[in-house]
Length: 276
Image 1 (cartoon, one colour):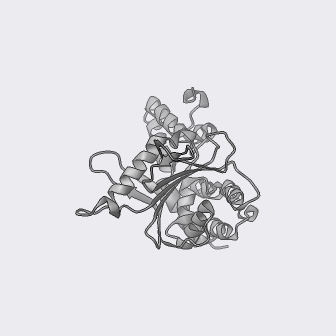
Image 2 (cartoon, rainbow, N blue to C red):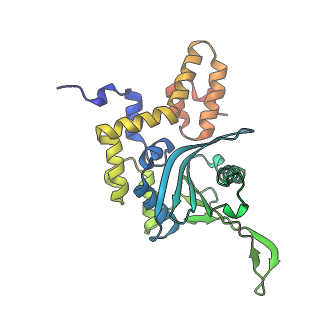
Image 3 (cartoon, rainbow, N blue to C red):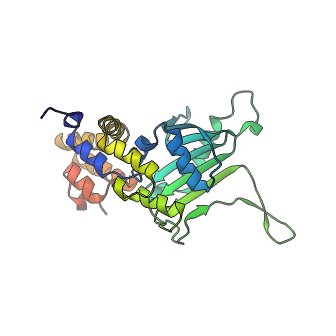
């Protein structure tokens, strides 16, 4: 039997691709990479809007800052009304803090208004973090950030401070019998046959079973995943830089993309050396 493209892919990377879920941001990047229809499908469910039409979609978008930290955004999209969407996948609870969202908004806004423009040119913006865990532990499917003034209307409600930036946290543990619950179920499985939504299942089959799709997914895992960083850590261990490897293992663990056991096996480090 002749060789296929699967034989030319690093077995470690191929195994990683086949085990990945949409909650793994490298795989999500592949699944939604420049795919307007799939991105539109996702946003419609997240916002519960069937009338929304997406015109642009990009994944792993680098937003540069000449004077400080740059960021790479998982998904950036735009609809027919020029509303912008930034969707982030976050497995680690520590990576979804308010200050991170504040920074995302600042970079997105700074790249929107051109020189000579006005603040009125700022579009409506949605920043949506899809979290694997219910970090607020209240069982709600979605947590929305509300900005208000300390001024009340006649009913005693604080007046809204509307800057047209809508911030949402999606609870990945929510598995209700509704479109969002089914979506979170699909994000949590690595098996396309277990998915509710054929739109997502078809994309997963392409990336895990089709030769072209597997090559694409493998390249994204190599480029954006932690495997490249882990290989560098392996070299560090071989050169006797064990302490440096331990510190970097702690960083990988904090990022939440790998479990302690996965890092231990990959780097050949005992778990107790980097887990406090």
